[in-house]
Amino acid sequence: VSVVVLKKGLLDTIQDNGRYGYQHIGINPGGSMDKVSASIANMLVLNNTNEPIIELHFPAAVFQFTEPCVIAITGANFGPEIDGKLIPMNTSLLVARNSTLQFKRALEGARSYLAINGKWDIKKWLSSYSTNTKASAGGYKGRALIKDDFIEIRHQHFNIHKENKAVVLPVAAGYTDLSTPGNAIRVITNNEYQRLADESKNVLVSTPFLINLNSDRMGYRLKGKFLNSVVNDELLSSAVTRGTIQLLPSGEMIILMADHQTTGGYPKIANVISADLPKLAQMKPNDSMEFKIVELKEAEDAYIKQQQQLNRIEEKIKQELTNILANESY
Amino acid sequence: MQPTIVPLGDSALTVIFGTSIDEETNDTVHSLFNLLQNADIPEIIDILPAYASLTIIYNFEMIYSDHHCSPYKYMQNKVQTILKDRVAQESNFITDIDIPVSYDESFGTDLSAIAREKQLSISEIVQLHCAATYKVYMIGFLPGFSYMGKVDKKLATPRKAVPDPLISAGSVGIAGEQTGIYPLDSPGGWNIIGRTPVKIFDKLAASPCLLRAGMKVRFQPILLDEYHQIKNTQ
Image (cartoon, rainbow over all chains, first blue to last red; front, side, top):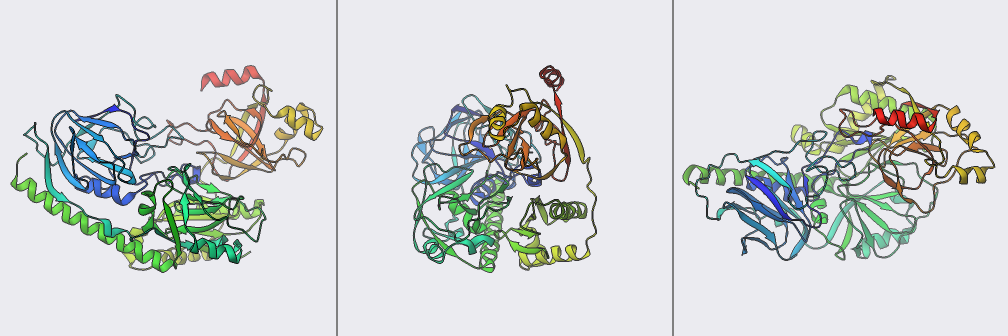
């Protein structure tokens, strides 16, 4: 199947779980912002969870599939439609020859994930499919998708005969319980938390912060009360990571996201826990969050629990899809 | 100073060796970096050496599924053992490199401002910049961006308050006592004194970044003609 971009979106890039092993030469990991949704999208099409997916921002691109294939859409709900008909999220879908996929409304969340069954004909750069737009490398020609781009995909496992009908396969993955309800974002404090004035430590956990408009895959700038630090000497640059919360000289905070730089010189006051990064990745500009400080143990336990839930979801989907493949012909 | 180990979030830890830019501390950082690289520990997915600290990004899932314990505690123990038993490690790669630079004013857009500010002639600036051997203390900011030091105090110029919107790949700059080369076209706040025709970042190369932390760099002044000759052979 060829997946053809009929119309470009705001920022639609090929991603995977990220490019690790190169941060010492300044090449950041990148990867999907919401790794849970990206993984589940791949599970629903029987791909390995580190296969490439397309990460979509609203307004998203319009795609056409030249042959029947199996797809799934997870993450943000942008009101996906196949040939004008609304299709369910978080579900395996068999689409017909020359189907058109478009996204009509930004209903919920910030990033949607499109997985397509099979082996994608794109090359890895430094052992990852993720698009590094700064280095113009990886993904599809090192850039966001534009009109007339196309990706060749050789479908696997599914033996598709019927060509003219879209089918919603009876396999779905509800996974809202993988994140905590509400707008709390759990953090663990970092080394330079002690630089905050006592009053600011209180402000950090007792007042809401909004995501600023100029927030992107590199980082979220936060809008809220300013924080004061009691020490103002300059810090030496050192490594930062996804979820690191830096305190800018202005007293504002920035949370580093997937395309963060590898090092930074601003005080690192806290780090969002791994289990809450997918939830944070689905927050949009002007969404509000409240920080909750937890111990490292709670952060580790939450991430272990999330990984175990993901493994269970993967087993369930695999079993159901295998049954379908054994009993039905498409 | 005894190194201290602190968590950086729940999937990384930082070993802190000091709080200042000095070569001895930085040598300790790179020695540990080389040691960890040679040890080839499967749970470690990234190692980031900085001026006076080293950060390890670890594979949380792998550690937990193999050992059923706190991934942080597991890595902390591992690193403590390595720190206790460590012996100085030599680097695996070429460590000395000469980089040709054209200090032509069409490239060195901040040369005249520095000359005015520091009461130096442009040729004195070039001479001072080329006289020293610089150590790459760390790589960060951009793919292959080198933080080198230290430049002669007479050349030390603070970062610009307002960054330039576009600095060309290959531009050589000064920020405080640091000097560095922009590997890609990028916005940036360093004071630009010249440009190298050598590719600092080449995405098609097996090893895309020319410079690595721990290397020693010397700048060779070249004429504008030579710049173009070398550029054409790249």
